[in-house]
Length: 353
Picture 1 (cartoon, rainbow, N blue to C red):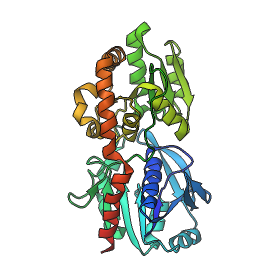
Picture 2: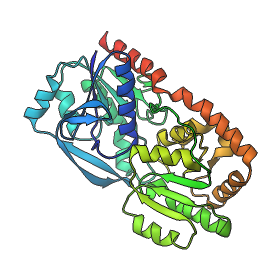
Picture 3: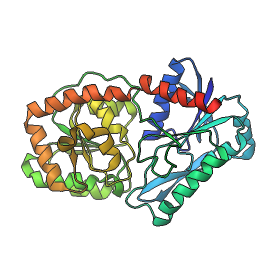
Picture 4: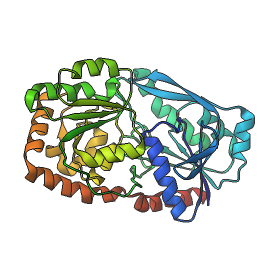
């Protein structure tokens, strides 16, 4: 099949949807399909996959995070839609406006994956219209729907979608060096909860382990000023995929303190594949990934004291840390794209009937 993977976000920026599209595309290509990625970027390549540019985007603040608004000239939309795709697979199709343009013009089989969940700061009006908007999108354009988790599909009609989680394509590599660092990977915005982690380190005082902060955002100056009183906190800014994997292989623990709005948590499985146990705040997307080690790896949202206790324990107790490392190195294989791509392909076949 000739398959288009459609992304409404700037593909030059790292992120979970970008990683999902690249991993799925590489795995589908390995299975013999012709893959092209469509996004609001210039024509080119993305991690070895052909990139077909369509439209331009800009970021706006929304619900405690930022979303991309994209728009393309209709002549460009029609030209892209006429490239002979058997299946057009949209990711975050509800993100206006470019996906709506392409879906309305393309006459072939259309499938969509829902990645997102409402966050703690998502406006009430947005929560109310999500079920209605999702049903309308399905009725107008889609043959099949996928959700990366039950939470991501919460606004979809029960039984109308298939759950296929986020996957990993990059094979795990051996750990690097002595592991003393904590690692945070994500945007520096309120929803991602970095102040909780900094507060936990403040409670640990002189016992606080060093921390790498990989990410950018409008809270950086404020958080850097607060963390300046702690030993060994290093703000690295936005990092490349290669740098992220290197950090994951060298960290003692990944900490994901998000307040909510996480439909899955791909960075947790990335850490597990690198032999790095993840500590995560108790929101449904993270709980789905870590349910078999809930008591050891999940802490209550914004609970600095509980997080501090788990950091202290796992930095001091090699036996428990090694047990969790071993579990993660086995568990991540459930999310190997070489396994999950077959499930996505089955959805495409069903949509073509």
